[in-house]
Image 1 (cartoon, one colour):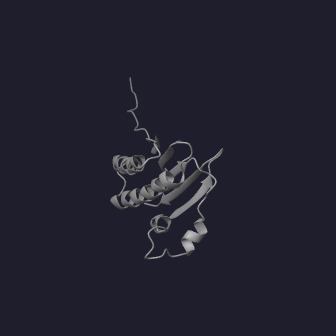
Image 2 (cartoon, helix red, strand yellow):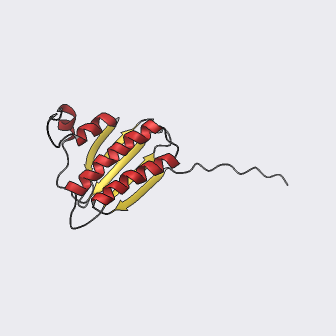
Image 3 (cartoon, one colour):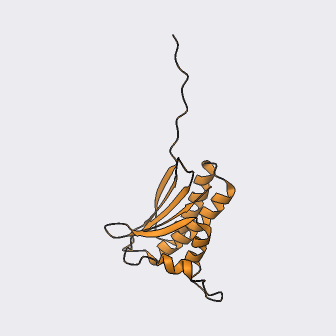
Length: 146
């Protein structure tokens, strides 16, 4: 009996995790991102960029996106065709979307104590943005080409 050898399956590269809206949850988001991307054997430069992006998005979710103790979600996905990594952080607060155009146009104050996080995201990501997440939340996303 002739049988074809088993063909390797194209494994999905999707990861999603719900986390608590705490500083510990934000730190865990960063650590989980690094471990998952290492498991997918992505290039070190891509992992480092994604780590910083997730750190910023998760910190913002914890500081500015908490509603009634509801958590935030991180999602990672690699596009099978382009190889681009997409990072998403979704929080429960949809009433305050960041002005992505203003972030990209303005340099942050060098002596300020805040306001540089999304500017760094704009520098590290190849594309990024924010969109409403119905019924009441928002998703910040970034894409990193490999």
